[in-house]
Length: 108
Image 1 (cartoon, rainbow, N blue to C red):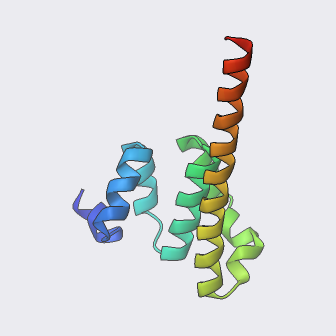
Image 2 (tube, rainbow, N blue to C red):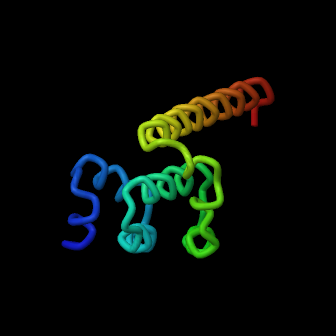
C-alpha cells in the first residue's frame, strides 16, 4: 500500500482508481516507473475495459512504446489522454441514453 502511494501520490487520483479498478490492476501500475506510460495504461485500461491479463499482455508487448503517442511531446500526451477520457465518457453517456430510450419504447 505504501509503495502504491509512493507511486501515485495524488490522493484524488488514487481514490478514483481504487473505485474503478481492483487491487490487481493497481499492483500492475506500481511496476510502471514512467508517469506518462502509467497514465496511458490507466486511461486505456479504464476506457477499453481491459482485464488484468490483457493489461499484463499489453505492458509486456510494449504497447505504449509502439503507439504514435509515445513519440509526442509530454504535454501533448497528457492532453491527448485527457481528451480520450472525455470522449470515452461522452460515448458511454450516449450509449446509456440510447439504451434507456429503447427500453422505454419497447417496454423491456
